[in-house]
Length: 299
Image (tube, rainbow, N blue to C red; front, side):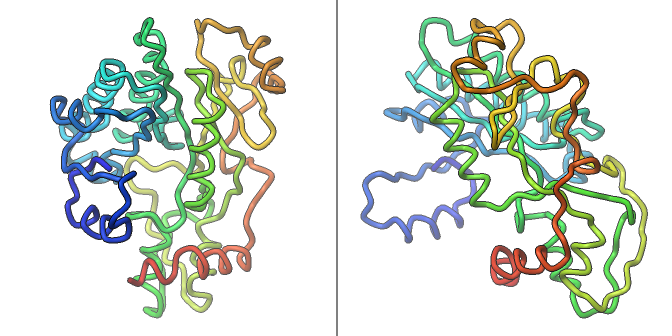
């Protein structure tokens, strides 16, 4: 466990006390030398470090670039040099057709990890990416914010038309395991997940609250996108997932489809939260919030 948050490491270490499979390193992805030490003897890496809050990234652009781009470059070099076998990097729907700095840096990060497969040379280290939407209850996301405003009579809603993808923490972990087990190198995995209307989230959290329309903030979209129409020639359907395949890879799309029992998507296909056929209802959202978020957010 490599991070710069000593308090979270302290709390987690207590849960795994006496388990010699887990060791904890205080460090930062910006610190290349420290990362080499942390990766000694490690075979697989899940890269989740990022500056992720959109307004924070807009106000601190140099810091966002140092973590999300320079940090990715440091990790790629360190993984190749220390003999790591596989790396899965976490991405975001905001990396698809980005309109804010956070999304732009994550798009660059995605490109770096995909290119890492060629950069690795004969080392054999494989790199893939998992891309998903909002993790239900994650820090800085809308549901915990609405929960803090519950009972005040009104909830701020940016736009009545706004939609977002939603994924549970467990689904996000499953997607990482899927990538680690199945990746050939260079895939960007996108899980098929439901969308939700922001107004429905507000109604699920506080049914009696008024919705105060405050307008879209800088760097926000009405609908989030995870696969663009421009990606469709290189995108395949794996059943529960889509995979955007790298251009110029050692394998062709047809070969990949044959090995992975996949099929090409239709030309011009895109995957966004507004046109997604699967939407969560208010009762479904209420149940998920109660089981996945409510107690954690209040704690």
